[in-house]
Length: 118
Length: 112
Image (cartoon, each protein chain N blue to C red):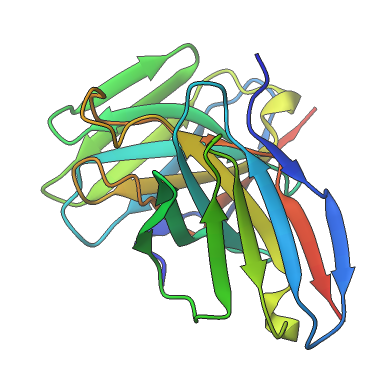
């Protein structure tokens, strides 16, 4: 059973460009959350998707957007990249926002995508 | 912004010794979780403790939670070189929201 997978592993972009990161959740999971982790810091919540809709959002500008597909996989898009967007982007999946699930829910994290903006 | 703080920020001990890390948080929580991260890669879930629990064990790990002090501790007994990693506490403030709020982490180094 594959866990959470993310692609690409590493990415180098130039300021002003746009980037798309991808995540496939663990089998059986329907909720995907994205986190940004700057060097030496803890992860910060960007947003969460369930049933192809953004359910919650952290304190990130509109340059950060996402999408969830019918197969529960998800994309994170960042427009107009800034140097400060350089970070490890983590995807986490969980089951749970559906009515049949029982909290609390353990989140399974992928290996992350290391984004460097130059 | 981060929910809480981990203490210490860095810890270096000899193999076989016990390691204790502390976490403080600011708001009421549904549960608190501890994660391990090796070399800036993905997070590995270690243990979850609910707000109505005071202590929980998993193998060599022992977690305590004091909701009155808004603090938690993670004890790793009989440390091994493979325990070298960064450890993060994460709180889930709202029932079922799954919006984890992480601390800044403790960098643990186990010396052989």
